[in-house]
Length: 343
Image (cartoon, rainbow, N blue to C red; front, side):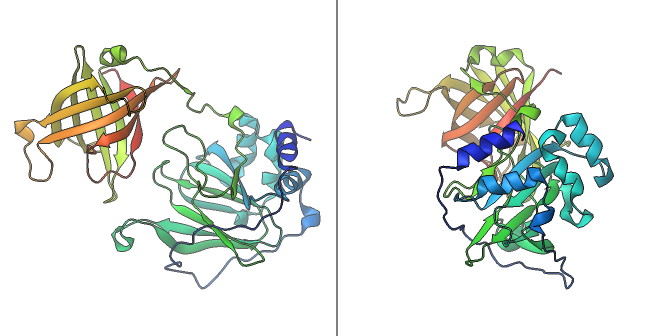
């Protein structure tokens, strides 16, 4: 019995059985005529898979989900990948899944999905976010449907651009809709906040996730040439953000389409926020648009209050909005991770 799964089993013993449920998105907009249908023979489940299922029994969790790292190879390379990462210690049963149980989308994030109930229907759809659904997202093409089977899904262009959604329907008719993705703040698996319906099976000890944030020392910001990130917008674009901090509290901010010419440039100041109601390490940034970049599409002045924190070892800089205006009104998230650029 593997250590990770033993801990899971012990942890779940104290839970009592409850039904699954979550808010249902819009109905799938496009369903293929041919549907991949499967049934699972519980007698053929490996001991590892059975242990995962048993750990979820008598709990409120409907679905167990494990993020298994970045995978950019073909399904034939899975065995080598599991051995190289050490994941074969607890997830070797993945190699027994059929080709139909390996669903691929654009992206390199590998997820294992295990429904708690062997008679629950699990279905994987495209997750579509565009102007036709007001960027709120909806289920698109059906890519896989099975009764009770574990499913391996490869997808997501990044942690802020998920491109598949999972539906689990229990025998009592209640449903879970869930879009697996990683948090842009701490790199961990995002799970629904409102109910304990998705259990995180991710073996984090096998991956180099962002370490915990330490106390923030703003005096070292200016020692890096610039801090850069990519931001996803509501109109389905990537923007490259770049911040340069200067000694004595100066800061500049510019952005443009990813890998293209800078379109907007601001100069400003950064100072420690004095409002006692703000969280620790909160800063006020005031920006003025450079006259050479004047545009009716962007404001001439920005007042933004953010919380800054470090990630040790990886040297990442987390910036999260606290108050004021966003740097771009089309931003999707309220927080993002900046990386240092030395030239």
